[in-house]
Image (cartoon, rainbow, N blue to C red):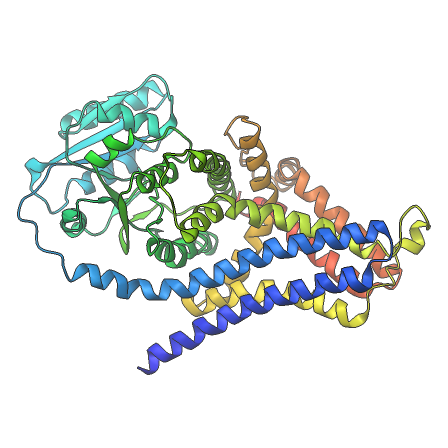
Length: 518
């Protein structure tokens, strides 16, 4: 009882942090327009800042709501489990692993581990979907598959990406269910099918998604694991209560008949998210099971994280455009308000975290240097920013400080680490330009490739130059903020200087993390 009360109190405390963050940002915005704006130029700036604060406030409140709501999911899931019965028969299941130029040792080890699932062997059929371009690798994997009773399917074209490979596999399989695993996921609980299949007594159930985590590794890789854990610990349970839990592409089980009715996997770079929406639109239900059955290979380099985040953001932008068009269809399912918010926040989530951060930073620069219209004063006069009073500067700084404290406290409560909390906060800044570029690339229908490669040189000088070239946008931006912060300090705008220099440090994290972690 004491533990439950403590957890509830801590959750409420985190919610209040996000509420305070929202209110302080909005109050500071109102101050700017009522007391700080004296010209059309400053009115425009203050108005833009208010709009950004409203958007930020909406996401903060939504995060707090989802976080608190997620605490009720275990009770909801227990209610479902009470009606589960042991399997009376064993349907056929396709165990599928898509690969593309992956490490053959990892592929073989993990596929053999999947073959050890506790389930009648004659009811499981294994598929290795190999889109690899390396002929020697293909031959090696084909021999491995043939010698282990695994169906090997190769495509000469990567049309449709992973979704294309999966849809091609459907032509070769008649199994009643499909279990998906990524090549790097090592099964740690052989009861995967025995545990999940009983839920499908509900004929409306389309898929079950389990929790995805990485193996322990370095401080960096463990922090990246927490980066994703926030989604699986808090967002997925909250969404599952609205029947909008996202199928995450692997460590999940799908009903084949539902997939056929939907028309297969939508052939986008994040086919799993699109499939989740179509499942909901076709009036199917879904379940999120917060239990880990397989651990993935840890993300040990910043480059790998960049490529992952680029793909996510590129795909989420495509999803947002797809969802808006899909919702306009007069035959589309009428969704609840919360379902709509779930999908919109998913599509805009990473774009918000990245684009809004950059816009807030730019607005901060303009506000600090916009005492009066730039057409009426010298640069030296503009830099003094006299209209911002000490009290409101403190409020503005406190808003920024609270934006740090909230995720750090959340990480400390649930993952027992302040250091990782600060790293999670910093990662959002280090990835902001990368995510923004991915969103723009998707909006303009450009290549979904990140175009980012880690440096292999061990020489400090050459590694630094390679890092500088790769992070030129972020390094230029952070350097500019540093210079502007020093200017503000020279003209006695101490709070403005602290604000900008702190931003400069955060954006320089892209260079630092790429240099340190490759």
